[in-house]
Structures are given as structure tokens and as C-alpha cells.
Length: 164
Image 1 (cartoon, rainbow, N blue to C red):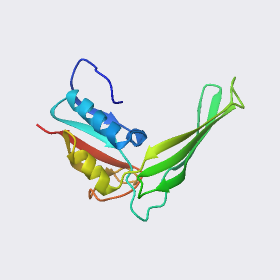
Image 2: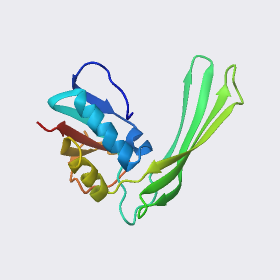
Image 3: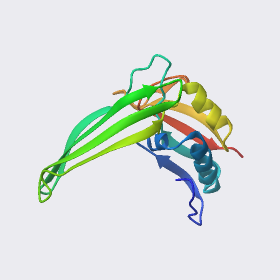
């Protein structure tokens, strides 16, 4: 996510499912600079990045099942630890194969993530080649209402625009 060259530019890009939380502050900076090189001036980069508040409870808590063909899975993703002051989160993913040729297999991983607050996220964007045009709440049943940039929650979408 920090070292790539696609050899072209695009009118826009999307980065879903809190992927950028896997990056440290320095890695996010490199990623945003690299992305800006791949986007046209004033292009949009829509990223889903959950933000936490000072009194925030962990928001990673997803549990679902999925199937395709004869294979079905149970997936759990939970916060084990959240330190807002240090800007870190430890999350655990567990994928259990319920049916199919690999039934009984379990893949479990611990992910050391960055926990962004509205203030630290705003600082990171201000130091990047982007500006935040809008923030949307993807966690409501409404049509992604626009919310204040100081909002917190796990399903926030940030509309970033390449400066220029």
C-alpha cells in the first residue's frame, strides 16, 4: 500500500473496510502521497476509516456467516484492546470453515492497527496531498448522511480530494 506504481492515473479510487487502519502514521503518509500520484487533480479518493473518541468503546465487533458452493464460513472480527492515547488497537480475526472440503479449518490472526481520532486523522490529512471534502456515516440505515468531521464510529467514509 506504500510502494506501488500503476503506470497511469485515475479519476477516483475507493479504499473500503478500514484497510488504512493497518498502516502506521508514517505508512499512511506514504500511501496518501503514492495515491495522489495516481489520481488526477481534484479527483476523489473515498476511504472508509473508523475514528475513535477519547471515551470510545472498541467498535470492531463483526460476526457473520457466508457461503459459496459447498463451502460455508463463520467470521468473527473483534477488538481485543484499544488505547486511544497511544493511537493503537489490537484486533483479532477468526475464520472457521464450517462445510466443504476444508471443513474444520480455522484461520486466526491478530492485527496491530492504528486507532485514529478525529484530531489525529485531520492532522494526517492536512499533511497529505489531500483535503477532506466530506465525511459520511455508512453505519446508519439512511443513505449515508453527511456528518461533521469530528464524528466517531466504525463505518465512517471520508471523501478526500487531491489538492491542485
